[in-house]
Image (tube, rainbow, N blue to C red; front, side, top):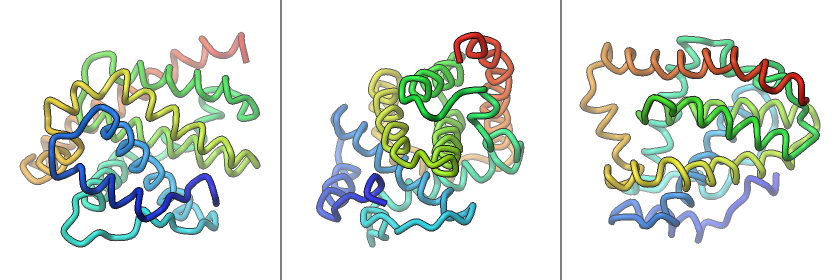
Length: 213
């Protein structure tokens, strides 16, 4: 699908900046690449035929593939904890998938609530799981072009909310330390916190969006 295709040259450029201090623009570009890869993985998992994006090919010795793999692993853990929370996102939010404005506003509202009490890698993984769940809904409801909107929306959210936090940690590669150095029981604790943040938000946002949608 064209909205998920990017050239291998672009992927190589994105991968390269993982090895030095990234700029704001680079962090946002990386966030969007990771989002496309995450969405692609979830579409394949639910049985929706999709051509694997060129940028998602393995990069020997590079960190892009490693970061993407870890982000997906954290997402797997979140979805294991609450298997129904990251499915049928549109239905849970009671929104129409035919309006770009509605989808964008809902996603930004979800993101804002997830990070109300601070930023953790668990909450970042939760944001990506929401984006992927929403993208799956869009494709299933014959709105595949909306996937591009979701990716751009996540990039904008990262630019406004997460870039400063990411820069303090040296970029996206910091997520690899999080998984390697964190005791599994402790990791489960902050993943549960991320799930609870999203779960509580769904209950609240339903009543906010219902009168308007």
